[in-house]
Image 1 (cartoon, rainbow, N blue to C red):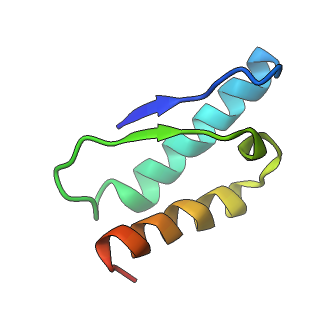
Image 2: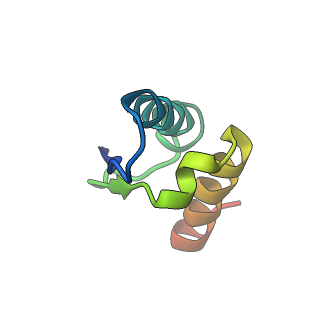
Amino acid sequence: MGLIVPKFQSSGVARNRLRRRLKEIWRRELQIHQPAWDLVIRARREAYGASFDQLRDQLLGWRRTVLGVR
């Protein structure tokens, strides 16, 4: 998995927090169910204000859409 977290005029602390949250969601929820694909996630500006649960719901929604998995 590749992770892109643009600056969007945010501090390094905010970027690292978002990066850690996305990596943890990937590790807990997605990595074990994911086929052997190369994947790049690019965070949007709205992701900086999202809670952990909102980020998780978005990524799980992506998985349901792409893979048809519940």
